[in-house]
Length: 296
Image (cartoon, rainbow, N blue to C red; front, side, top):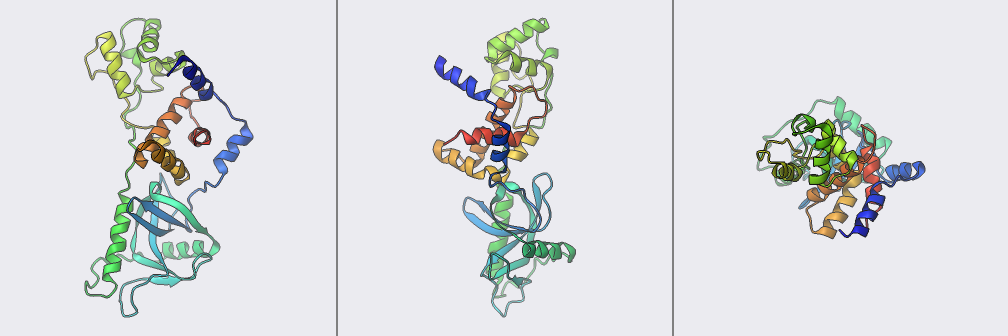
C-alpha cells in the first residue's frame, strides 16, 4: 500500500457508523433460523429444499428434505408425506431423509408460515422414522438414494477454519521489559500500539505468519510462539450464517476464491476491525455488516 492508501485504510477501519445505520444493516433481509421455516440449502453441485424441524443450536439443527411437486410413484412403499403450504401447492416431505445440517449450507429462506411451523411441530412430536433398508427394487428407490446423497453433500459443506487454542500472553514468552516487548511487536509485526497491547496481554493471538516473523526477528526457535490456527469460534459461527452467503459469493466471484476462502477472509477483516476497538466482546454481526456495506 502507498502511504495515502494506508491512511485511507486506517480511517475506514476506525469508522463507526451511526447506531440507526448499524441496526438497519444487521436487520435487512437477514432472518434468524427458526423451526418451521423452509429453506433452500445449496452447495456447489446440488440444491435441496429442507424444512427446519428444530431450532438451530451452535449453528446446527435437524432438517427434513422436501421436494416441491415431486413424489415417489403411487406403487412405492417409501415413507413420505405430501402436503400443501403457503408457498407450495404440493410439497413432499421425505421422513427418512432427515438429519442434522449446519447453517453454512442454507441459502435462501422460502417460507415461514403457520402452516410450515405446524408441520415442523408434527415432525418433532412424531417418532423419527429411520428406515435405511427400503426395497432396492421399489420404483422410488433411485430418487430416494439421490436425495440421501444430496443431504450428505450438504452436511459435508466446507467450514471456515476455527481456532481451538486460547490466546497466550506474549508477555510471558518474549525477552525484555514490558516496554521493550511492546516495541518489538510494533516494529516487527507492523501493528498499532493498541494491537500490540492486545497481543501482549493475551487478548489476541498472532497469526502463523506473524509468529514466524517475530521468531526470526528476535532469534527465537521457529515454532516456539503459539499462533492462531483459525477464526475465533464465535466469529466463525457468525460468518457461516446464511445472511452472509451473498456477500461471500460476491467476494469469491470478484477474487476468484472459493466461497469458504472468501468467508474466511471476511472474518479475518472483521477480526482486525474489532481489534481496534476497546470492547472485549465484539458484535460480530455488526462488524461484518459494516464491512459488507462497503464492498461492491
